[in-house]
Length: 466
Image (cartoon, rainbow, N blue to C red; front, side, top):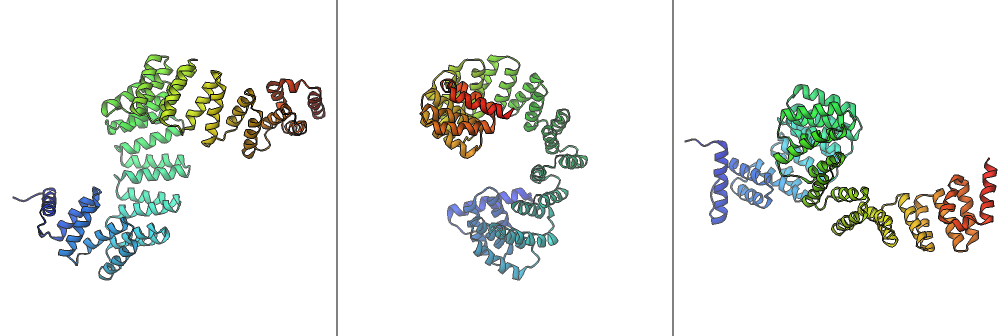
């Protein structure tokens, strides 16, 4: 009885692994070794692949294909000079083996010599029977060079040679997106789908392009075609749900998100979107239930904690909002979005010291928005920490020079510290930048605004501007 190809490969693999266990040395022809090595490399079993290469070359020392596998492993291990030397030996025997040039290109690419790698791949392209693979490698080299136009063209050629290479299709879309060629992407996808009308990935990508352009009707149609092409395509249901949300069709969106849970394990993203839909429908209990499921499913998903915190904040239940943001911070104390909410909630609860801590942590974590500096300053003013408030604003000036909101606050703070000269300096700066913001002095420093000298300075400036 003749064995099928798969059965032969499995038999060879079983014999090889049995040999390793017993230390017996069995003979395999070179093709068997190639299949065994390929299997191990495909499954990431590098150590076993190396053993197979070593034994294979001991039995077939002249096999170029086994040496090329050896080169592939050496490149993976960054032993580039040794790999290059072996390639030169093979080249002396076989100048027309495209794998030599592909591996040469891999070595050059690892050395960041991408232009030289491209030259090698162009030689390989002239002699290969597998153009799709070489075009894909060329596309990647152009990506390394950030030459997105040439990368795009090569990935397109890869798709012409192999219409089912979806990684190439994703790379084509990546290039279109980077080049901000939305219309070009849509035209290309429509042309591709004319030739491959049941390509669910193509329809999915087309839907995403229309979604980005806010053309929700066409996006919905594209995702529907993706689902017709493959009714188990979870990504299409998720994207369709997002479109339906944008169209205000929340019940239909929920149905699509729930389908993804029937097809596979529930995801935190699906629970989150369902919660958002229920919240829009004013079904608070169901919204809250799904938000809690979101953080249960994935405690590290910040959008889940933010959703449940914002839910209670909008309801005016600030203590419950604080409870959940504290839980979030206990899980990830480096998340600036958590600390900003922590500060805002504590401000509402009049916990000023905790609010100041929240804004301070936001700044320490790199959130240098003007609003963060300003809000921290105003809390420090309320706490009577005038010198700390000044230091805070002087740091803000480095990022936001010539900002009236900062200058008026600095003026008021220096006046409060009896530093009149500095106070007038910053008051003049503020009035010159934007005189209408003088109301900041009135709101934050009413005792300073009540001074005749300050009022006269403001009045004089307003008179000169009129």
